Length: 315
Image 1 (tube, one colour):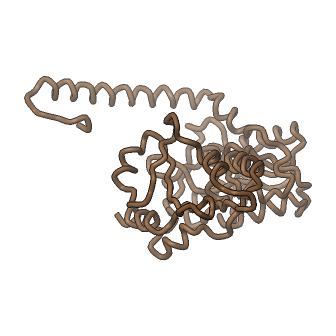
Image 2 (tube, one colour):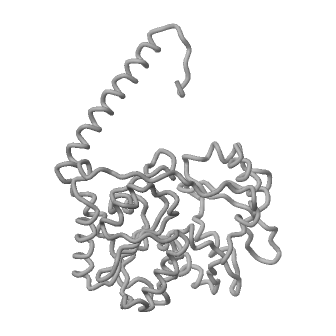
Image 3 (spheres, helix red, strand yellow):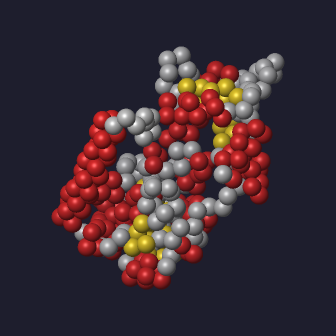
């Protein structure tokens, strides 16, 4: 499709460049075993596949640290790298006198240009309280109680599953995963704000969010709002809770040189793990449906094996 053609165009035009002055520019793709065959088939000439997890293959961090010279720099798009990865990379490069720089514009996007598909725009939908077991307002109150314990002023929610869980909404922005591309900023003594393309919100979803005390702002305003809060703007006080393992580096850097004041996992992780009565009933019903589907699939496989029809592993 168009998206695959655009990716191929990007791969042909963009190079991961680095090394000593006498080295030829190199283009490398790091990926794990799920994509070895696909990468081998689709990578253009001049690219090298780096098989992550295979003995003898250096990590991205180790390769950069051993290849670049003091005074050189590595550029990254902070919006697409986990904060934990970028912080580790920065520390490793610093040992070699190499700088890590956040780019204002991703060069891949520049090469992709107008051929890049738009961001997904699937409509959001409500996850019924009868299935969720708790209202969004109750969950927000529980989060604020945790903020009180940590003496934190706000929680940044960037993991899409946690956004969906907290606000009892679902979406279709990621294939086969019912989530909405969005951020949430929950203030202890202020509002909860959902940063999302408002065109995705039908009237019933907008009404439910308003009823739970949730404001809606454009998706692109999230970084500026986090930065303002961290700086003390709007009476926030600046003590922000953000887990580097589940947030991108752009959010981390928006908090300033000090970074997040609370770095532990989001309280939503534990809230999600402890299932209430409605959620337990939903899990049991889902397992029954899944078991029936698996039994039907195995029966079909058995019938196919016992017949003369030739099949493949895909069948």
